[in-house]
Length: 145
Image (tube, rainbow, N blue to C red; front, side, top):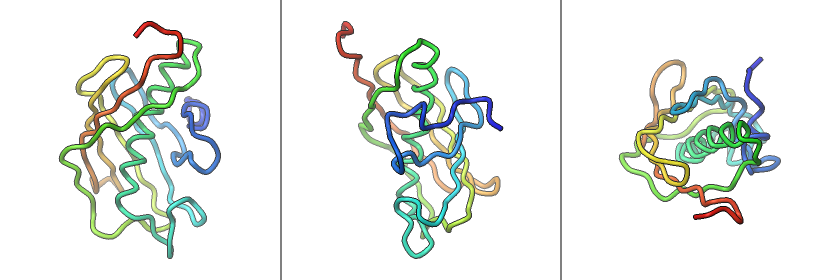
């Protein structure tokens, strides 16, 4: 059992929009999350999730880390925005139902509102996707900014 709250408590997403299964590891700059591709999950077609969906897995992992920081501050998760990506590599095809993926995101630059994260997706210990994501987290309503 994970020592971290479920992703649904860390992300502003609800219901089937939460694609992560659990946070496996986390600290101030790095987070690792687990996803198991399941039949009936969003984006599964003919037993496969398209490879491009790992971009959302990566973004949600970054969101989970932000959610952990918000939780420590006694605040609710906020909606963040993906600004862009660089050097995105994806495998051909996609990911089959039943596959387990580990999503790792490491902050390489940023502050409380803007950041850049090196992300990596592994399957059975082998890196299958990677990229650098740039994200923006707007200030809370009523906060100076």
